[in-house]
Length: 335
Ligand code: TXA
Ligand code: MG
Image (cartoon, rainbow, N blue to C red; front, side, top):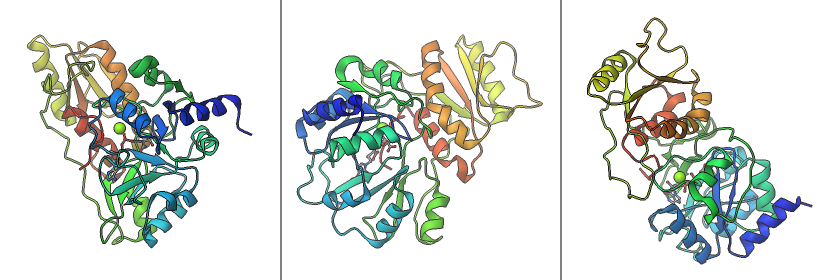
């Protein structure tokens, strides 16, 4: 018997309401994936284009069959191995799946989250929950419940608070539409885990957009005006960081530096530069990144200079999100 809060949340969803809930990756903004009006409200309050599809969250791998057809063996193995967990699979959609959730496409993205509250909610609700990250379009995903309230206020019917998210970065997305499984979005599940499951040749993937040294401050106005302007971000190699920061300061800009703990040992920054730290290791860095970026926005610096993290695979998801944030598009777009 689920607790009262979960029951209430499931009732709200059945009535077409929107319920934000924690997952192991980030907070999701949930709506009944069979209720087109509810899902249209999700698109509306996020400010998200209608052709940007939502992930359907399931309580159980056995439910996948109700949403997807022709599920290949590779998908079965991935589900068996990684669900519940931070892996989303893109599969051919059944005809009866609403094209509102798929953004008009004939494929559907499915995921079974690994979070006790999310799973309790999914079980109590019974069906699939369409749930994008619970942030306004273009902003970074929320990793704590209060951030959802900060973004949406009372536009969301209920926010379930499950504390901070364990991964803090979105799920890894794998497409099974082609001849070989292909990574569409780097995320909380490392590519190496997919190789371990499917073999070195069993998975196709690119590399994250090179982030280091790109001078790509966010173009003001590139996001719709009603979003709080996030601080423009630049990514620089350790050696270039100080000079760039000082040059911007000389032009009268309020600059902050975001760096990895202990990374600049032997290269101290000038006292005049406010600095913020993130953990030295990839997984913990990823867990704190979005919260840090949101926090920095509240200081209203003119520019945040991020010390570029290492390029190795453990950092791919982080580097991908940083590159997007620097390009002014934190929302995880399709490649
Ligand atoms: O970790 C996560 O995946 C979080 C939590 C809440 O589960 N959700 C999430 O959803 O990140 P969202 O909507 O912010 O990102 C979903 C991504 C989008 O980039 C979307 O384009 C892609 O999934 N996607 C959804 N359906 C797709 C499809 N049929 N084909 C290709 N990409 C798809
Ligand atoms: Mg998102």
